[in-house]
Image (cartoon, rainbow, N blue to C red; front, side, top):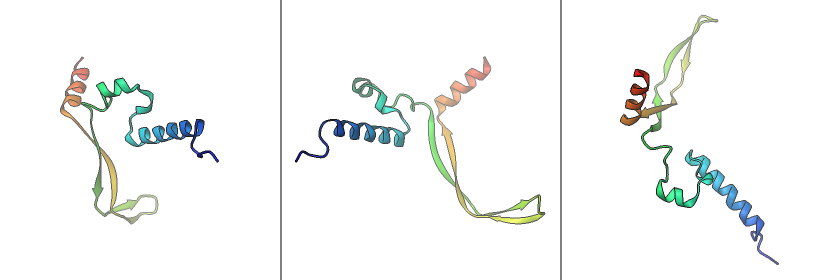
Length: 96
């Protein structure tokens, strides 16, 4: 009996794995040639910034419709910290 991952099955499995890894990295690596990846592995992310999660403490909010106070539990929110080059580029484009 042949191996379950021969021929086309192995090729399809490799393509799906490449899509999953590219999606997890947030970079479309599966659509670039190997030579271009060796020259510049993550060109789209350089000089841009960093995404991170910030923790927000528990706090009181208000329900305006009902006129009551509501407890908002501690939670995480996405945040972006731009790098210096990105900030300068935005400032230059606004100045034009």
